[in-house]
Length: 156
Image (tube, rainbow, N blue to C red; front, side, top):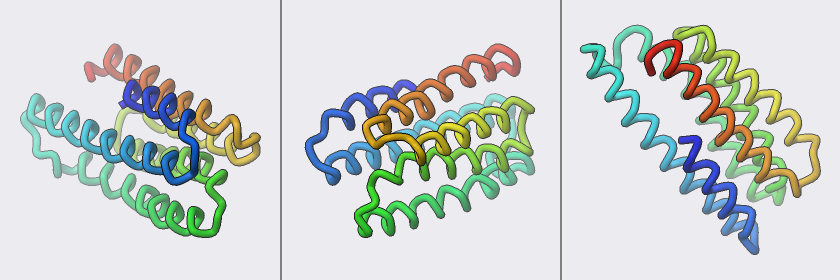
């Protein structure tokens, strides 16, 4: 997920208009969702557990409301001409979902979520020119960093 986000940040930073920029990030969101779902299914199979077991279900139900809110706010902010607020909002709400979902996972997951929330706060206050860099740092860098930590300490 982190690697595709780095690619999306590079592509998005080269788009000439807000529609193409948003399309790039929406495609990345769908790709990341697919990768995350596939990885979760593989991990559940390896552990011989149902993906909808207690912790998995709780994580999904905790992560879903902030992601749904981000989807709704994306449409509202885009139609209001506030595209510059999207990166901060996405990072902040994704982080919120990770913090709440991470309450049912290993202890490092909520820490990752707090990192996303911090980057989202910075993005909301930063110049619009920083948007793709902050998205790369969060959805790329934080995902990769914490992916390594989780793989090393917890086996994936």
